[in-house]
Image 1: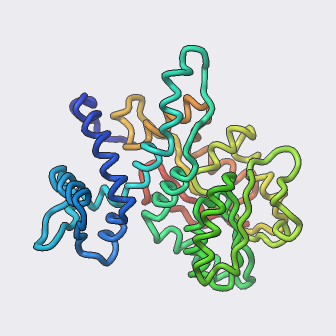
Image 2: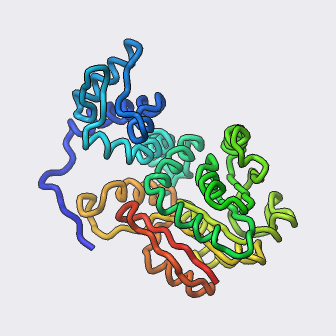
Amino acid sequence: MSYATPSTPLRLSDLLEGQTANHIILAADELGWWKQLLGDAREIVPTTGLQRSLAVALHRIGWFEPTETGYRLTEPGREIAFNRGFIRVTTLGWEPTFRALATDSATADMIPAKTRPAEVACGCTDIAHRHPETIKSIAARIAADPAPGTTIDLGCADGGRMQVIGELAPSEQLVGVDIEAGVIEAARARLAQTELAERFRLRAGSVQPGGARPEWLDAEVRADVTTALTFFLLHQLATESGGIDKVLASWMDWFPNLRRLVIGDVVRAEGERWHEQPWFAPTFEFYHEVTGVKTWAEEEYTEAFAKTGWRVVEHHDADHEVFETWILER
């Protein structure tokens, strides 16, 4: 795999104006502009002075273009809207960790990950939704199963992935688990407004294997689960558990009726210098290096799947050059 190398490294102006651009992107996201413009809306119409200033800034950057009554996306703006989840994760979600570099690096070899969980959850959900065909393909396999079961999302964030699966697989029951109680409460409140509320069980707790089974894993959930999925989490769990295969084996013990696994994760990029790697890969790898979390090569995932008795029935890699999603069955 090869990547184009820019002729010049990052410049000071890239850093200064890029930071401002990040905050403008997130402000527009909070207003719902990106989602509207990627959806059915053809334009947005600012209604306040602050909104007009924001829209003008987005126009001056080159991501908006004016219409007779408001603004619409340019093609570069469409790319920004499509990838805004990455910006939320790195600018807000991981910001406490990057800030700690200055205070802890003189005395520590590594620092524990310090995040804003709600921002990470929101950003990861946006990233997962960039290619809805992947989630739809997962849901299609679940819906086609002759014996309906229960799907669990290990690290469910706001429950958005499970919501799509529930809509497309109407006979499936749904369980979501996330370590952050506040994230679960927000998901519960949001999903309570949907027709799927009665099919959801949401639990707060860790999905890290090791030691006693977690409290959320009661006998009913343990027996019910037939499909388990996790996104952007296995690399961290595998670091703490001593290998990808160790995590998979533990989940197989947790859920004795498990017949399908869906793994979505970031794989380690090739290229020694940042400019030799695809975008986001340097940030991802540096963040995990300073927090002591290993990044894993693609072949390490596939070897672990085979070792634990899983076969790959679908492989999706259109989402990003270093993002992979595997659907596994046995």
